[in-house]
Length: 323
Ligand code: PBG
Image (cartoon, rainbow, N blue to C red; front, side, top):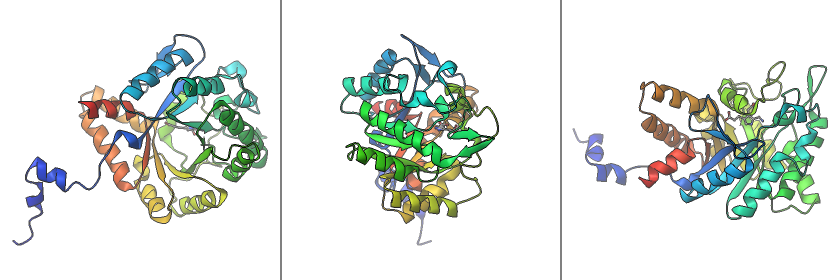
């Protein structure tokens, strides 16, 4: 035999030399959940190791992450039911939970990058990402709300606006609103290919944001489609997105690769709540080695072509690197 691939796998040193993909703490954005109140730190039952924090304890959590080397965060708000309405008006309240959290984080940690969420569902009494009328999700009317929300977040100090709603034309509209108001430097990370997925379950528990009626199939994408992801990417690029995102990540590695091959923009992938919960649940039962499964999953996302990974594992990964 002339060709023996095993020669390059003989020792750890050689394996490290020929390793094609590497993961670092700079590849990650840590998602965070914010709740009302003081001194709160409430674990999400379906996401062991992940808690919902009030604004004060959130600062401690971020300090811990920053010490571990994590530099970017994506906060999401859990809004009390009585503040929700049909038009998600709380979402652009300059004194609301989310905008206050953004201000406080930027005050304490000016060096971190904050990717803030634009979508109606955490604030909507219907639990949808758009305005619901007679069971239909209104696109263009929703854009108005998204624009106001993005502006409130930029005013609070967001570095990058990340619309996760999947309405048509939202990137162009948000870009326009930001520019009109002097926020040319605030970026947009578009949830370009966001699929109607069963893997968002734990996240909806954490924020009590599940749709009250129906599903999200008229705006989130059909998991069977990949060409449609290219169409969404084309539009986001034309509309001014600075980053493209694929969500979820693990069941959509082919989509990550496709966007990587068809675009020059940075590609982000969202390793979502259900993907995190699966690994944690199996590890708790001793059915697999949680740390190894985490590392392999994260590596596969990077190998597929993601430059940036949003993952609830960011902190665990950073701790692993420190060891
Ligand atoms: C909706 C939104 C979702 C997530 C982030 N923003 C899912 C949804 O309910 O459609 C999911 C993130 C996760 O599962 O980790 N705007």
